[in-house]
Length: 382
Image 1 (cartoon, rainbow, N blue to C red):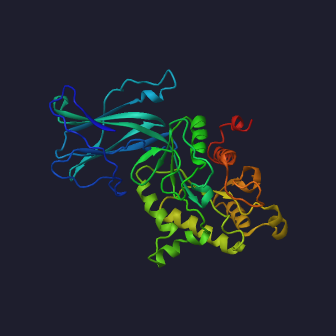
Image 2 (tube, helix red, strand yellow):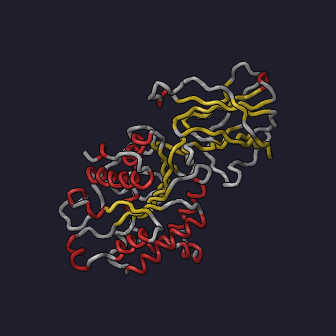
Image 3 (cartoon, rainbow, N blue to C red):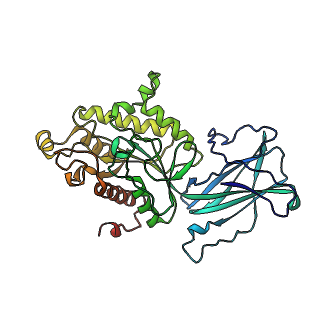
């Protein structure tokens, strides 16, 4: 929630809650003469940390007057205080470099990885003539885009919820706790991402964010970037484009790809290889040059494997990884029918309650290995 806090200052305006995500260039919108509101940062927003373990959190306030100075301060939200060193008292005000352009106060504050934070911004000519704007629950941590087909979306047997309260999902307009079903993604049931997020959060001690653009039942051809350019039909790539651009003010660490069940029986190795390579390179060019981590997945029916050998999708995924175009994610075909929704079937791709946990642990282990290899994963495999 956004507040305008009235203390000893002369004027106080109501600040409306804003869930507007703006053009990547400014992250702000044109202001009417009577509007005063804070656009960035946003409630439950997770801002991607840099290599130095900080993030430059954008500040954008729409105001009908230009301030002489802008200052900011922060504290930990009381619900998130876990260490005695965490402070629930606001730090000292610090000056913020800013621009005032077309009714927009634009700047940023550098925050260390962690959260949730409560941030206050003070703008005015002096202490006696200033307005304070407050935003709750701001995080600096790691953000992931998840994509692919049903096992990356909401087709698990049971709905999952975040147990830490520090794992969130982005729906293109606002962030919210990452309770299933995940926004944007296909399906209406459970997913692995609240579980994966909680595991990461408990290990890394930072908020975790997800943008999930997975679509159930898709094959690699549905994600073709060239198809998005040659047709007016709304493709998976244009859908991804829409939401990843809205995510730009927050940044993201990597793309997590789980798809292949829809291609093992119809795609030859070269077709899948070319399609996935094209997708990864287009994403890096069009959106962000971030790593991709891809699952190795096809058909887990042992009769099929013994009959055709290495399936086209699996072989292509391994080749993409070998060439350095992507990091190796989990081999989910190793999870047996016991973890699937139809335990009687020789092949059932979707996961039951225990399967979602097992699947999540595989992703967690690969994330730790690829991105955080200084951290042990033993506690999750006892």
